[in-house]
Amino acid sequence: MNRPPAILVLEDGRVFRGVGFGAEGETFGEMVFNTGMTGYQETLTDPSYAGQIVAMTAPHIGNTGVNDEDPESGRIQVAGYVVREPSRIASSWRHRRTLEEELKAQGVVGIAMPGTRALTRHLRERGAMRGAVSTVETDPDALLERVLASPSMEGADLARTVTTPEPYVVPARGAKRYTVAAVDLGVKAMTPRRMAERGCEVHVLPATSTAADILALDPDGVFFSNGPGDPAATGYAVTALRGVLEADVPFFGICLGNQIFGRALGLGTYKLRFGHRGINQPVRDRATGRVEISAHNHGFAVDAPLDGPFDTPYGPAEVSHVNLNDGCVEGLRLLSGRAFSVQFHPEAAAGPHDSTGLFDRFCELMDGRARG
Image (cartoon, rainbow, N blue to C red; front, side, top):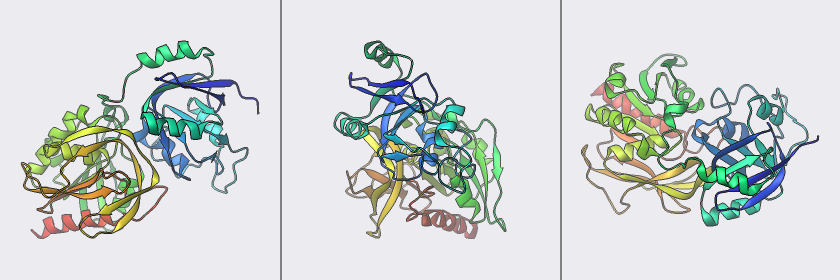
């Protein structure tokens, strides 16, 4: 296949060269890397990657093509895509299209280049930064000027851009046991499915829903999803969650939902140097000592004390999980047992599945409310 020359330019001036992979054109975003060995379709369609150019560290991408069952949203969400070597064929009985066909159809600009290892090492040393991929601009200096003029991820409110425009319902599988109000900050499709499997009727609401909107459903529990952007820019979600916590309704949050929970408790958030993105991150449950391998996709973290419980407007809370690679906060919980959150992804499509029991814990909280 004849592919046009392409360049990748980072905001510190580093230049990588390769050939186009996907649509022709140019794209801008935050340059990040994903360490997953599988699950590229789930990565591409995860709304948490909005505004980001994603480089895959696995060397061979596209082997199983693209199917119609595994997307985590209705479209590819990444701003751009970087791979080392595209698969020349798609080999899976489930595939409907090749990966490159899908990228072209959805207008996603990518680059195939031999330097993905060097790129990853550079980002680990210098941190995630703005970048651009282009198949139409041959002058790196000209492209760099536009990179430096592009928006930063810090201060970006992206949840509004990926959320559902209207509420919708994911029905319970089998007998309905609970009503869950799920605020869509960039929710992955697998998350409400995990709840539906446990008898939850999930009412998915837009990101800007107020506490009154949420509580009007008289939910047994409230869920805040994963999503893209800077949690400090989503004050509307923090305000809504504070109203939920004041109403003492069971709460569960994932990823951005964890960061929003932290800010609702009065904690700060900060940008990680290069973030955690992949399906092989070890976290420890501090209550049990159990280590779980987990799926991650985040560039921000909660700043919380690790040395014991701390006071919040809703009672004492503590850090429930920590990342064993860098010690950052991976979960929070109120000691009352009415609210908890995790930074990682227990729905875990395409895996691993060590932490799916957290959905059962959420159901137990809702059972407790029903009994109370």
